[in-house]
Length: 266
Image (cartoon, rainbow, N blue to C red; front, side, top):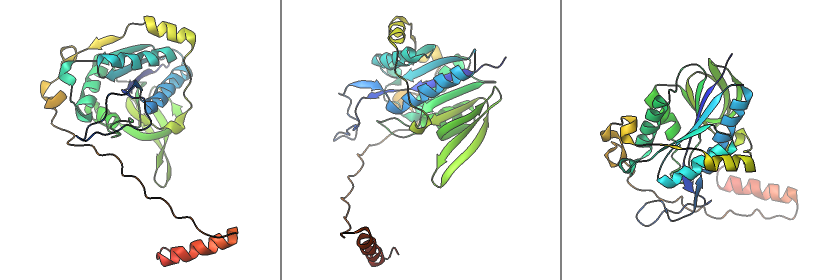
């Protein structure tokens, strides 16, 4: 009987719709923290795949401070079977390259790979917003990957077929298992945890692994990572738009056409 081996990688991030960058070019950290919003969709899709194929198992992974355990407990409350937190002072200061490396090592330790194995992530986080961790995990593992997944149409122990959003439309792709998928918020509507789920999550054990548990190469993690983020800058504010004058739709359309001609866009 077919069953799936499912993993979802999540992150604890500031629970704010606007994450500030301070004068030193670093993300503001003195904010309330929660499960990264886009990771909620990856968790939900993992649960849907688990429910879609009887006998499937799921696990959540995260890398961060001890407080990130709360984000993992949030996934357990929703129905994820088990959770692992990668937490070690040696991991501090690492970028997406180091994060993906450590998550790939944890996936190997958990026995990920082979038929029916799929790893899901959110498209990006609301702090760094690089969108690189999912594809980098796949690169470390040597697996196929796809980003911007908006729908999973078919799944088996051999492959998974998805729709992904691209600039000029929708692509349908089939990836052989094992594979890594980064999903968008269009893929589903995340569920809310039940009281029973919340109570069970409070009692659940969350495994905690450090560098020695993973056998991690010290030259690839934390501040020793060969990659580094030099500086972050906030997205520049957009200039206000220009209203098209006119008392009727026809008059507005005429004025818009004239403006476009003036700008040599028409």
